[in-house]
Image 1: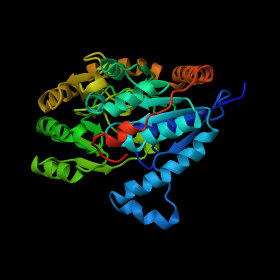
Image 2: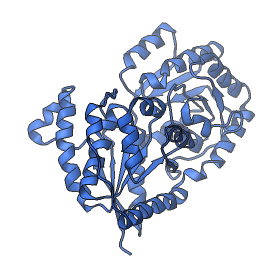
Image 3: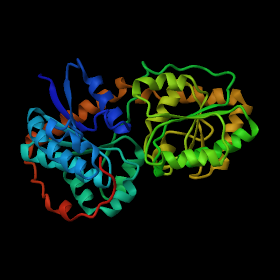
Image 4: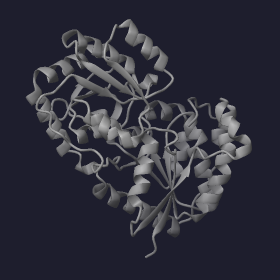
Length: 381
């Protein structure tokens, strides 16, 4: 049997985030595989030389991106047997997955939507066009049981296949003596509520003046967070900027506790990376996190925006390193299901199934009209 050719439509690593990292891991995992040949079709393709200036101009950049992206879809998807489309929510759903679905339909290719957004409850409630499109693709795949439940609430079927964590890159290390070196790796956007992390750290530093906090990330809220750190009179806070995926293992290795405080989330890769590195995890219970972290078993949970409880959890770990070690060891034992040897057969079965189903039945035509009138909101992909 010849190798299945799978086009993975997703952000490149030029848009650093969970989707681009997962897409890159997936493509690299399929390299040299006897059954699947996967290739990236980026939603952020390089601009032709005459319009490269448009990258620097808001809104013009979006128009130029779509004008470059759409023709590339029609060219690159032709050589695919299956089209695997990564999807976020709001406006990015319209700007990236919708054109890819339309192109794949035009070319008669079976379509998998791989939906990753923790905003799904609000997005699907607001967007009839999104619900209609998701109901008409060949398969919806999500990385968490949380999103399976959300899809079911809106009458949509989805299958859960977890994200991948590369355990060859991350090295587990026991920390018998837990130091107050704290790490967070979330983007500086409102949904991740990094301000709550800073407020929690203020309470930790009141008890441990030598405690340090590294914030690895970037985003529109950076200036506000820097002002908050100054207003809270925090010391030993490092704004490390965006960290490339290949540098992440060393970053985790150099810290002792992983702390985050999102208000919206699905299945954050950061928690898996912390588990793989041996850092005990303290986090809020947003979205799909409760399917990853079991309170006082493999991590510690607090309610969203509850900086006092987050701080209390960190202080407990510092006061009781043996408990922190138990959490870390339990967490690393539970991440086998995120390794490629377990995830590979699930994706292979999906690819083969949608291809066989498409070959044996007529594919309904896509009605492109609803999205044109849809009032979705959000940022560009």
